[in-house]
Amino acid sequence: MKGNDNKNELVFFVMSLSHPRCIKRVAAFRDAGYHCIVYGYRRGLYDVNEYPDGIEVHLLGEVKNRDYKNNFWRVKKDVAKVLHQHGSKTRYYAFGFTPSLFFAIKGAHFIYECSDIRYAIPKFNKIRWLFKLIDRWLIRKSRVTVMTSGGFAVFFGAEKNEKVVILPNRVSPSLSTVVRKSLSASEHLSFGFVGLIRYWNILRFAEVIGNDFPEYSFHFFGAVDPVYSKKFEIITAKIPNVIYHGKFRSPEDLADIYRHLDLIVACYDNATLNVQIAEPNKLYESLLFCKPIIVSSNTYLSRRVQQFGCGYVIDANEYDSVKAFIANLRIDDINRVSGNELAISLSEIIDDPSALLEKVSSL
Image (cartoon, rainbow, N blue to C red):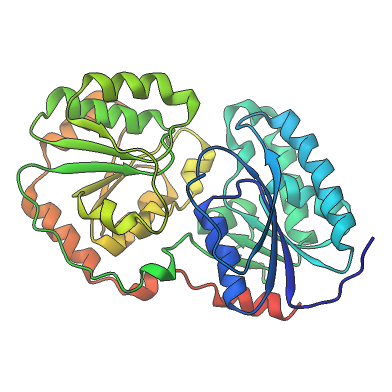
């Protein structure tokens, strides 16, 4: 096993190599002068995104979504290989619960980034308490824990933990020069979903637009989760004003995508704990491009939308409630909300990892 006390080297372990948030985080450390080495997997979802120059990337193969058992043992084996390659004195940055668990068990010096609660799905309801205990242990064992939502800190009771850095998934600094302007929406509204297509509420919203509002259009941008592909294909094939534009690069393609949209649909399925406490990047993208966002009620995201005054909070779980919301939308109010967004400072919208960089530099 090698030993490495180079404080300017960070080894990253990524569950989805081309996820834009992971690329953004690694690039921030590279820009701060770190030698960044990345190990990770393909997942077939964000595979159009690439790491910038100056970052060493090692592909560990491909993992399947929701294949929890096989992925668990696969990560255990690969974490051991990475530790053997780089040694116990190296600092590691682990994206997600499973790799962080094995770095902790091995006694490695690691930073833990928590961007979702994988065990929040119903499958794990009976043993969620156990996973939560383990997660709290991981926070204690980590040198620093990054959480992408203040809702996660509340869930873990870690709001005052000095080891925890709340770093919402804000927009890449590469978009800080975007010319922002408020909407002058017309009667022909363009709704859009931008991201991984994997929520029944989003598909229902598109279906309502297609069936009941032919004067409007709904646009999908992103990869389709296989679980939802059959329903998605039916909707996009049979309804002419529901259009699929395919995958996109983030952040490179975002300005062009948002230029064609009036309202951003992000009303995820709020029956799951993860959706209830997460703070998705769609919030900050909608703020940057001054496009009102539509989100589900009873979520941390809905509270943030109300704080910013940047969108609409709805019950998206029923067809009729979505239909009633759309029927009652007013153009003047949409333009008013867009004006609210324009007034929000870029400092609230653009990613600023300085607090994280400062903590890591002191390790």
